Image 1 (cartoon, rainbow over the protein chains, first blue to last red):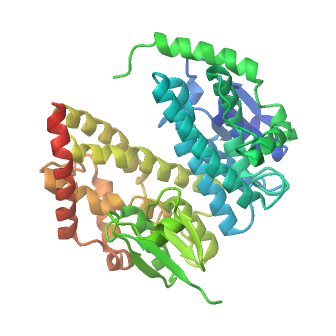
Image 2 (cartoon, each protein chain N blue to C red):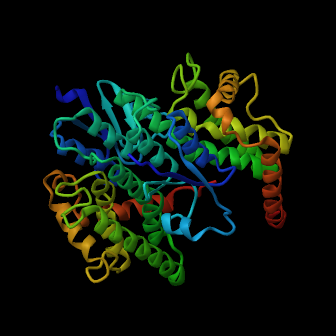
Image 3 (cartoon, helix red, strand yellow):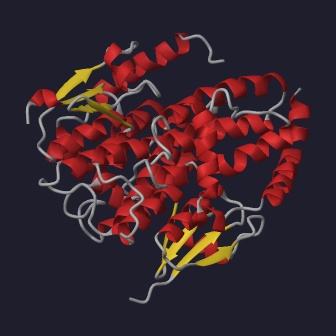
Amino acid sequence: MAKSEVKLLGAWPSPFVMRPRIALNIKAVEYDFLEETFGSKSQLLLQSNPVHKKIPVLIHADKPICESLIIVQYIDEVWTSAPSILPSDPYDRAIQRFWAAYVDDKFFPTMRGISAAQGEEAKKAVVEQVAEALALLEEAFGKCSKGKAFFGGDRIGLLDIAFGSMLGWLRVTEKTNGLKLLDEAKTPGLAKWADRFCADAAVKGVMPETEKLAEFSKVLMAKMRGAPPPK
Amino acid sequence: MGEEVKVFRTWSSPFAFRVVWALQFKGVPYENIYEDLSEKSSLLLHYNPIHKKVPVLVHNGKPLAESLVILEYIEETWKQTPLFPEDPYERATARFWARFGDDQVLPSVFGVFIKQGKEREEAIVTAHGNLKYLEEELRGKKFFSGEKIGFLDLAFGWVANLVSVFEEIQGLTLIDHEKYPLLLAWIQNFMDDPIIKESWPPRDKLITKYQALLGSFIPKEAAEK
């Protein structure tokens, strides 16, 4: 398939953009990575995702697919010959989808809330919520992996991608706030899984270095502070 | 195969209806287990410790939560009467609109219902901004899924049974004939389907319930003025 048949609109710091990139790597699909300029949205993005105007957007044979987890499942369903991203058993698939939704609906907003928290007490409360979420994910890891390396078993799957893509920002949050969130003592399964995930061939090239992401985070924070207050 | 299918639900939960309708379309026998959300059963808390919500599907003792996740499971487990499109692109599109419905449309419509004054005016604008996509999606189609009811119609089922309840209680019209002829036709076609009709929440009970719910919001609104 010609490289230009598959395009991905995105940006290197975004954990959501990382997800389809990992999926395409797993499937060994070549694609054009069209990076958005920070602070502005391209015409192609606005046309391809008029509803949300957000990245990532996968454009396959000129048809846009939006929302990172939907894109990952689309990739798995279209490129069927390479390793599967979702398990074959319907119950296992549902469990992965459930926890992937949990990562997006609960874990990510809570993690992001750490940096936004005002004052020590508020911050402590949010950190506690993140710790609780990680404890649940540790338990989920035990059940899903069944003793193997990843949530998906021997190879990374949907839930590894959904949660693993958050690791860059998790590490930046730890660094910026002087915290240890992913603690070997508290969540030993996840701590080891995180290293394995980041070392995986499909992930290595697209997971940004923590330093680089931390620098970007400062730029992002400054921009958000300088921006007019939301209505 | 001995199948045991249970649905933990309330009589009114729109999310539970999706699950129940899907099972009915596929002709899968199931048992309703009605919950009182003010006093959740220990069984519900055992099956859904993370969110402690309905619906929960329990299939041969194995629990699943989150209605959209459950719908995909039902589709993959009972293959008769497919509810999802076969084509991956169309499937991705249906999933996209289902998430949009839950993340944007439902909260904005609910906002119109519970807010007052200027906040409501703003909520109405937001709701129309979201609902217009639904109208567009119906162009050239009887149902969101095409000729027959499918996944996306079930996901939007709450539009058919709740919006008019909100409109009646508040004395306003959100889905009007001028802006939403297709959506109104869809609502009628959806409601007229024999399988949907079989499990339809009683309107008078819905009105009573949501009137009471509104009452619980109003003191907060007054306090904030």
